[in-house]
Amino acid sequence: MVPRLSGPKMGAVTATSQELEPAPVSLADRAYAAIQDLLIMLDIPPMAPIDDGALSESLGIGRTPVREALKRLQAERLVVSYPRRGTFATGVDITDLAYISEIRVQLEPLAARRAAQTADRGIRGKLAELADEIEALDVTAIDRTDLMRWDLRVHRGIYRAAGNPHLEDTLIRYNNLATRIFCLFLDRMTHFDQHVGEHVALLRGIADGDVAKVGKLAREHVLGFEKAIRSAT
Image 1 (tube, rainbow, N blue to C red):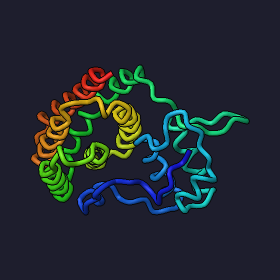
Image 2 (image 1 turned 180 degrees about the horizontal axis):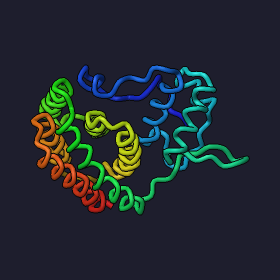
Image 3 (image 1 turned 60 degrees about the vertical axis):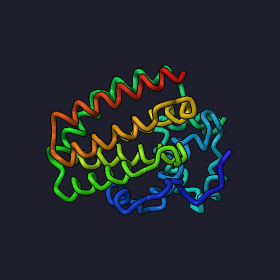
Image 4 (image 1 turned 180 degrees about the vertical axis):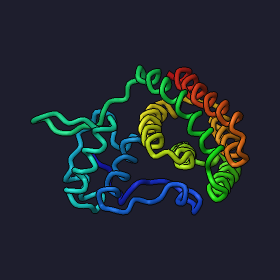
């Protein structure tokens, strides 16, 4: 089961978003980004079989880069491969939320504090611009899936601004898993505008260099996310 498309559907990708999250360069990286997006957004449903040939055709990328991408995604627990059975999207289990949140509640504040403390003026400016763009969104008029893609941009922008590639890789992995749970319960969630508003305050706090404030905001954001998901189950 593979949707036919040319790559990840990231909505209205702005110049600011692109600079905070550079585009993939190699074919393997392009395949990885595209398939990762399909898995995170549940365009490839949990537990669905993955046909590397069909993926290769739909993405317009050769089988070898696609297979390399699937190996990377297996390490991130987004796909699983069984001998003689094939490759499948992993399931989405709400019981994993507590484990994921336990990690994110420690590392998200660390990334926010590092970004506020160490990001250069240019990056701070881009985060402030992203905050302005998000604040200008009409939450009632935008598809919730597109809003979730803004959510991904915010978090990945902060991870990049933190300036620690190992922290960035770890947080992307766990935020991806959290986002899959988010997608599963998205239609049942309320007060989505509040979730978006929290991003604005967090981004501006980092741009202003307010280390103590952003650490607290990031922690509250993770805890609030877990609470909202549990309320929707």
